[in-house]
Image (cartoon, rainbow, N blue to C red; front, side, top):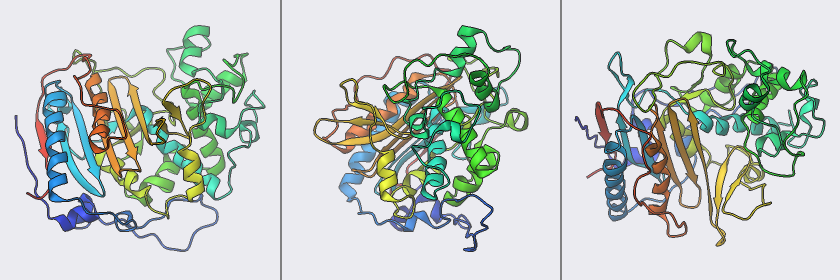
Length: 420
């Protein structure tokens, strides 16, 4: 196994790993805004727009030792194919990559390899909707029907979709259970809307009465973004969010354009995952990204210029309290809420052989990002790393999750971005 150690100066760490690279500064966009174009996030240097305290050398080394130990025992020993990044207070403590983007062609998976991030895509979809709300192109409590007239449930609101309180069943389950779609044909987002508009599909519960996670919600939100911006969702995502944040290796997957270009997905025995009838639907999934790109987004969220505080607070507020527990859901973000008042946001994902984890902990200014492209539940163990940064969360690095499987480890690139 090959390991590469990269040593950077602390000045680079304070402004972000990528800011040290020549020519990798965020593109400056002209201040004059075309009123015919949708609103977008600011195009600024997000790594200098927020102040961060400096980690001590002792704390840095302590965290790094724990993360390295985790990576060896949980990730490498479990033959995870993917990438992981952990950061605190604007400093990347750890970054590691293992496996192959394409096993058959022996193409290694690197820091610049976009991986399907599954349901972590919902975070990005929600941020497009929230930006449209900020600029009064939408309101959270307007009905879905006011934007998509054929939508057949008049009480359902945009907030219900974002918080998974619409009562809508998952479109994939509707297709499977009610046989309302020819699975030899691919369905797209408009097809999802038509599925509900043209058939008598019962809601599982009345809107805003209970939490029920459903991919249908975010497939419809992508259509709402398209209708509001008058742009295809992939183009709106690029224009509104990805380009301004500087997420150069992130994109919305478009089947006909990208199916032969993207990193492959594998089952636990190493068999390449075939495309299916659901692979044209986006909003709920189908964003490809890298840990570095998602870290850029995570860091930007700390800036006062990202979203108005009141709106971001609404996104980070739990909406479902019908049952007791510490898990909740905001507007596109999962969260853990503890009785002591502490909480952090996160989202997991799974699609085909791709697994993903994203933790956003504003209290401790921690980001944990892990993506895998071969079916292996050990990717989810990265979530446990949040416990090393605070005693407020009763999460410990116990025994690894049982694996779904895992092939040969392949190439290993381990990057240490802390000055020694």
